[in-house]
Figure 1 (tube, rainbow, N blue to C red):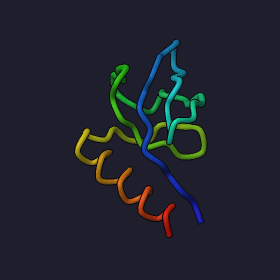
Figure 2 (cartoon, rainbow, N blue to C red; figure 1 turned 60 degrees about the vertical axis):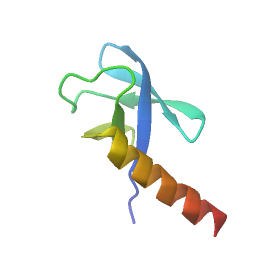
Figure 3 (tube, rainbow, N blue to C red; figure 1 turned 180 degrees about the vertical axis):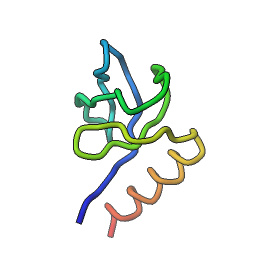
Length: 71
């Protein structure tokens, strides 16, 4: 099974971004995303940002992750 998680872009250096996932920061390759910007939400899978998320989509997805974590 594969998981992709929503993350917020905190900084960008070249094609690499530092993203925040659940308060943890990690590096993600942003080369598959068109015009990534700091503050945007992306879906991260296997170290790559694979899609942009709207703030509403990210909030919904993050709420579901939090709900699952409580289970």
